[in-house]
Length: 305
Image 1 (cartoon, rainbow, N blue to C red):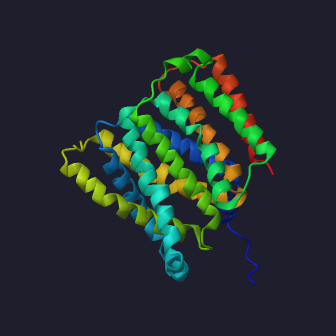
Image 2 (cartoon, rainbow, N blue to C red):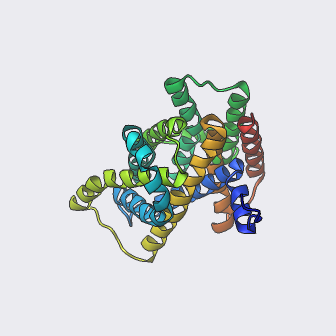
Image 3 (cartoon, rainbow, N blue to C red):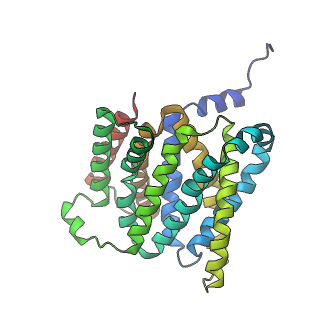
């Protein structure tokens, strides 16, 4: 056994990779940015094409780092191909294509409201598939954080619910969230491999699944506008909500389980409203602080043992 002390960088990496709350908070931050950008560039990039480019880019970005582990883990991956194909379809192909497609037709407010049901979708699928029930603490935490999400989105005005209109974009986002709940639950049965091997294999399969639909979309007359906004958006979504966020989310689930990890999805509206304050000049108001406090309290309660 070597007596050499671990380098500061490797010690920092080990510490970081064992901080589930930090990893899951960063995941929500990156996914919040993805939703805002997905809505903003809906006229520049066709939705299925964006999902396809996103996962092809993430695959080639991660492949050099994952290759040594992939070669070692290939026998294990090959033995679990059916499960991994389901993970690729639910976590990458269908989920993101539907979400981007839905953002073409709906408002950001509706999208954030639908995303707030994420922890309940995960809890439903873990119950259906594996009989894992929410604890009372998890249920209480989800309820508190959901209340905080509503306070932020509705700006402290409950009557604003009456002005929300449901359309086909909302149905697509709800379907995407429902499908993502399957992915989150099935991560409990993931094969024992290096995290890089698992994510590169499933991302690659998910990318291949979106290619035929993206080609059909472009052949049907959808236009991809190539400009600085498009390139900047694709760079962001490939690196942050794709490569990094899924690595962080998978690691968070591995450390604390899906039911304790899912309430961190409620952090997305928190980060979304904070982005509006920082980048769009929106004023910080009392309802923001009340909503943040409820969400943080709920996530804290739900994610503890």
